[in-house]
Image 1 (cartoon, each protein chain N blue to C red):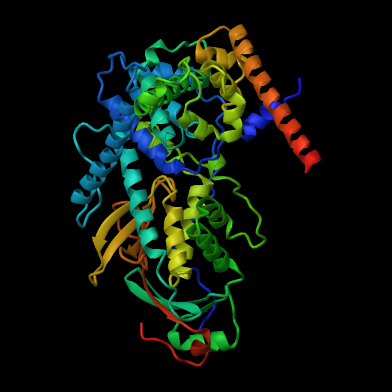
Image 2 (cartoon, rainbow over the protein chains, first blue to last red):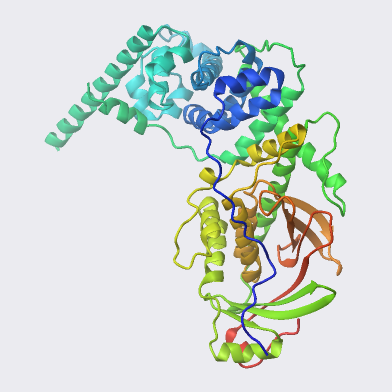
Length: 212
Length: 352
């Protein structure tokens, strides 16, 4: 009796060539243009950018981030005819839509908070309308929330697009629809605030250590 | 200017641990539903005005409901036959994506059901393997030790001598596949899948280093296939990862059949593959079954492989390979039992 191993009856391991490279693949602008006639083409844009959008929205809005990221693509689909084809990379466009939706989300949360504390609000100082609310503070975490406290929402958005979405100044300019000089000013203010916060924190820590 | 402030801001970014894949599928289905519900020439007028997020949330719930509806449609049309998605109004791309999502949900659901099961007693899995080919039935015996050993005999009575003589023929091969499945079962599905695809290399050399580098996402693959059908251009081939992960998973499913964790891990890995379909059925002896079919991406456009498992516990029941809709080239039945190596060496074998 032959007891030499005979392989189980599962079969063919194919010798496929590595996945063909994605060099020369269409630009985002081409996908968007194609999607005007062929809506399915928009799914290619979705596949290319979903992960980054989802992560960014989740980082900023927690569990609501999934809905906001999904809404971003729906809004983008509806606006695809207005996409500026000069820009091959659609990330600034998508992150710009997402940033608007996030801002809307936080404004809505603020209104809810104000309703709940209506009587208390009568005694509160006047609000500018875009300061950090409690929800956003929680999502940013105490350290970053302290650092960004008092900054206009537009400055916070610009800073987080730079630090969390990895957009550069020009892309942030496209995303927010403002001149690049405005972006530089916003980010400069935000970074100065962060540096001040870090220096204060380090000073406090050193002082506490010295007095301990 | 130093960038330490920017580095600090970047480091403050919350690391949310969401189910990215499921979120992806929900969002893609929602987008497809939205895209196909609107006339081609209609300009979007949805503003970003107040309440936008609440619409979004409703939209998202609708997407989940859509998945459930599609799943229900599949279930209704799949009684004993291949699941077909033929609802009017759904684009081919949408149907393909939905089909994949449904197949994956079925596999994940079964894996989650199996995972808590206790490991049966014994230290080895005995498999009676009957191959039907050319009008003949050939039955052989595979014995997979939990310690990675493997023994083979063409008749059951020959196994004791193989074990007592320590004629281990595995060389670690099946042990690596089984370990990869366990890793996937433990939650490291991506790593387990990569380990599975690379398991046959005796030196542990990774030839496939990333599922992302070498494979399309499930939705991309589904879209590419549909596009190919619509345009008449040849479908893109699957990738090394898809093919190797499928083949090795089949081996692991048989070699680790006695271990619920291995079966669960294999199902989770197969759920990653883009062209795997799942069909509900009943075996000749009355067991409820799931038939997992590897398609063009996993095997070959002109050849398919089907692994049949028990729908309640994932135990492998059979394998069929051959041209789609043609006469099977190979058909295999499995009978599985847990044993101890000591009992087998002593000639005490279960009746299969």
